[in-house]
Image: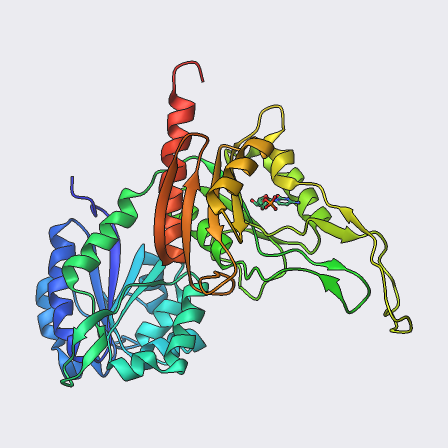
Length: 405
Ligand code: C5P
């Protein structure tokens, strides 16, 4: 059986020169067993004929928001529900901006807004348009919302210039799509993820916190969901929206986070502690803003409980994974924490200096176990989260399917 058998894939085509490659993508998807429908924007029709895409997909092509001519036409809501996966290839700068803004002024943008399917886009545009901060901000927004950004590739462009902006080739898009469905490694399992910083108030306006954006933890939650798990996320204060399909509990302090974890962890198979939990909290929380009368000021801090160690110390703990953000010797420090907290796996990353991951979209991770290390290298937080979930799944299955486990 082909790896895309039974998958309902909606291919969105927007108006760029790379639109001619969409026909090849549709053909390959069908060869791999997918059921394919095509939705085109008005400008895509200038680049490739709907008849071409109708011929390769064997289905009428959708290009109008209100398709009143055909009795067999699916409404945009039906089409949005039908899809398991939407892939927009090519995705122009204009379409990306409209998707990021949530516009629904044509069929394809409406489908993307009305669907619960996973959305992937393969950007294609001139490299200056790609590098423009407006495009980059739109891409960051979409990535934070869980949209998969595939490419673009770098190379010679239709405009005669060279740079990033070429649409990823259909063959690579297909490889990515099949890798998504191969990855049902956590089906039937329940995963709990903590993410983001905590905030320990000193007074009504000030507090102790850290630079965690939550992006890595949210990416892990999304990757676990895609791997077939039932996922819950417990998040400290972040600017990110809850990933679709992942019930998210918002907390503020480390003590709140511990209570939320305690309430959910007993039914969980895998616990991934990505949150940057404040180690200390002020002994007293002032209800009035602290005034600057004194020349110096001492803060009395008390230790917060270690949530990860608490979970790992349960009588029947889930498979536990911790993160260790370290400024020096990340592997050695992570191994020390692995042993101290008695967790199954620690994920080390170096913070501080030029490559500090805080707030960025990329990171570099090393998996640390008592006797070995696995370097996952540098990549987008999305790609690393996907790799990490695969590594966690293989260790989980090895541990629990071993004789005597
Ligand atoms: O000891 P350190 O804070 O470096 O350990 C990092 C790991 O422990 C992370 O996985 C973090 O989520 C977790 N942690 C925790 N509760 C704390 C401190 C850290 O769960 N109070």
